[in-house]
Image (cartoon, rainbow, N blue to C red; front, side, top):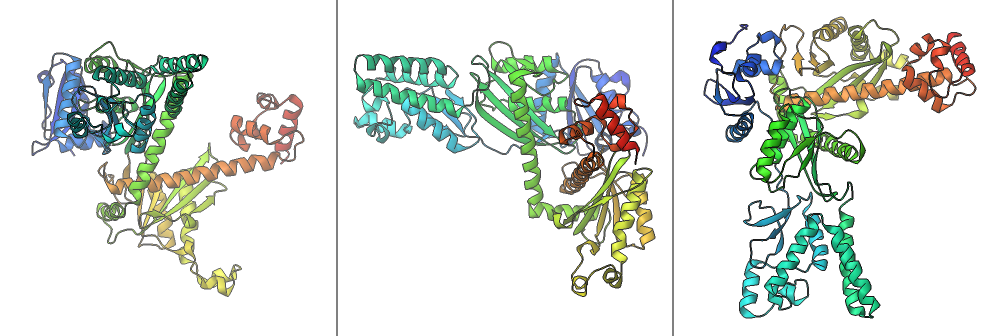
Length: 628
């Protein structure tokens, strides 16, 4: 591979102005769209020596055959043009949103003569005021049912309303007392409009005023013994309080803000948006993102905000938007958002402490849950799993699809408590009953650990049945199939070429020649083969890479869990006989030193730094550990 690109512009040709650039392939298809405050400085990063580029960036620039740019007047113009082109061209190397949901909203048709409230997924009703979105459609209906008890505004369709007004006969909701619209004859158009305004004001966050008024009116009616009116105000108050109970109070009444929680890994991201109005969560949105290039949290936030507040959005932009990390162009984004909002400024902030930080943490927890559900559902799709196994077979040159895959990972704490895990996937699904854990007594490094573990595992593939019986198995046990003796078609080790070569040595010594071996390096998601100087790079949105990443992550999780369990048991067993050292203090020692080896090396003075450990107890711990 050449170290330079044939289409690289001369440095003097690229302006230093703000602008938007596009990479195109040989068919003129747009591969990637980006913006820059200084086009020359930004594009020079893409034309650095190829070995110095991130693997996925290198794949993008080598796939492209040309680059072009458009100079604009300001950073704000660059932001707007980038967003427009991403929507128009849908470049494969830009972030891909998988928000295929059409959220239900509560809408009030303020543009009508007699406005009505309805549930809709249409974001373009002229003159309508929207509330939400709501995660479930039943939640919108429930809110309307409660609100109509307090503010009996029109709910019937336009055709029913028109027919009722022409005939003088109320619509069905009006006949049963569920609608206070003009067709019922109980209110005029003007009185109905006033109720609609109160309905909208309440949902906008001005809820305390209506609760206070209903309480005052109920008490006044009761004081003059007008019990019918008092009961009516009581029912209204109960309806208002029921609506408020559905919206958790999280912040001060004056707070209008949107909060974005984000969880992402190398391939995907999940976003959770909380819409807080009047200090209450009035709506929730969530969506997932497929990442092609390696993006930081700040870069993802940039794309997420553009997506959340696009021109088709019915969500009002609040004065304050809380994000996990501020993007580099935060000032330009604020100006762009303020332009869409049309009134006042918009502030992008991060929450460091207090109630807002706590709510941000809740949004992040929800985002992590959404990401887990997304990955679980994707891996459970039979068609996707079949495609993934076929793509893996093609990418690494296997004769058959790997129906049984085993993955190994090593975990340790500064060289102590070394353990390893083996996870098994069959037909793309985990077989947890066949997972195995390994303890490693001594090892020089990760490659030696991989070699030891693979040697022990592969020994089961060549172990004669007679040996198994001789080791204590009965004839009946020996007749049963031993799951650990099933050979995999594909063996994965966590790591790059050094780990692959260590595993290859174990395979050669065991005589296993029909098992395909690969390594998976986490940083760049590269697939390393034993005889290749260059990694296999799978497309970032491919089902094959998604499955391999899930298998690798599962092996890592299983190893970490065992390593932590073993570490806790290790330090507990060593210290169990020391008087005055209970579970809480053992846990504190574990947090402070991390392992028995480090604790054994510590002087009594260092041990006293742990909360709850005095000089006498520290001396007893030191003596106990060093007497072994």
